[in-house]
Amino acid sequence: MKSVDMPSLIRRSDVCCRDVLCAVLGLREIETSIYWFVLGKEAQVPEISRAVKRDRTSVQRSVSVLISCGLLTRKRLPVSRGRKYAYTSIPVPELKVRLNDELDGYYGVMQEQIRKIRSPSEKEK
Image (tube, rainbow, N blue to C red; front, side):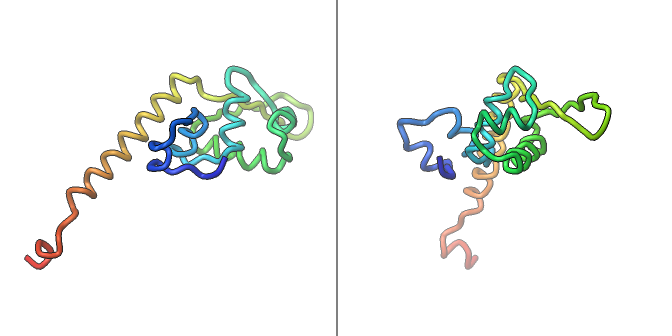
């Protein structure tokens, strides 16, 4: 899946939830795959890497993006040396609220920009 923008998304008949996450939140395919994989469970990077068929470093970068977006949470696991973390996705009801909030914000910004549109003759006044 490539980058999805709002206008092209609205015109398609085959829209799926992954497309919505990409368009509304600006996520990439790997990030949506990780979100759905860890939904409802805890998973560590090696397990996520195998599931989404991507290398560890790509998964770690994407996990960081998802944490900064507030879609994943991280829990430190007890280990004798080093650091280990388990990740989980926010629940779907929270995701829906987040998506609706983003769309409301997008709509508000667009409405404001539409109000600012002036014809050439109006600009001269």
